Image 1: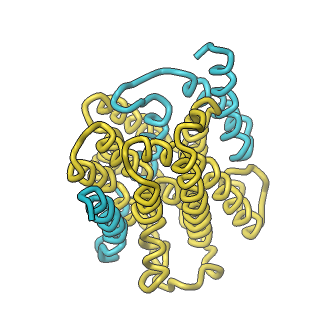
Image 2: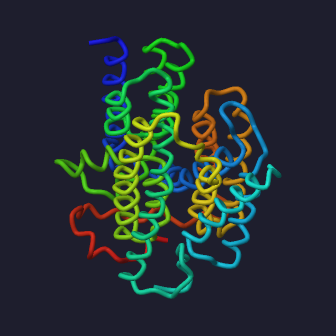
Length: 104
Length: 260
């Protein structure tokens, strides 16, 4: 078995362990007020960060391109209370259109 | 249900209709995210992995950022050990998701293993939009299962077709991911504190992007929530005292009380 295969399998199994271990924290620890507040705020911070990196990160560079226009369209659609799928498709269509036109 | 409960859809829904909406959303997320599997499969084989190695990564590692990091290091001429370490560094955030999700999902047995395996950005994000146990579970399982199905299917397609497949960016799929995350974040931005945390986290993520390996800026931004959570609460950023957590794990249909 090649070194690459060993790395693939070891990293994959350890990746599962990383996911599994998060669930093993004792519940009474999670219910402490401070910990509970942090776990309630975490999704907001993680989602905010994911929006930013999906929009403007390219590897280790910050790049402003057609994705930013896609995000803008998504925000407008959210403001008019469009359903989830419309928001996602609208963002993709805006970015794809700008690229097809060669504007971004 | 009251009007105070926002959903991905604005209709005033019954609980069942809301669950159906969440499951549809999970399917859309699965399809949009899964399509990215094409570029992963193509990149993996271009980086020197064979089709089977690409499939093991998608089926077992199953966390996109880590998988791209793994093949990126290998493709860049790095060592197999370096590839494994890079992917594990990025996988740390899945541990965080488990901490957040633990009270809502069943533990132990085969379902405990399945919930662990399906714990990724998308499933954790959709689960987080739920306001009841049932909604959180529906969001987690629908996004998790559909991403898993499509991600593996399209990884195989990409690995087999290799370089013949066009760039997903031409279809705007990278912007679709940004659109999906902002749509998931949107309903949570109902207080000034929540907006401040989201903006600060976005700022930290972009600030650290040039100095950290891809994927880690998201983790750095998580510190914003930790700091905000440790500060004395002025008005309660997103809610009030911690809700009681009922340990009745396997009765998703009975748990409809509001949690905010």
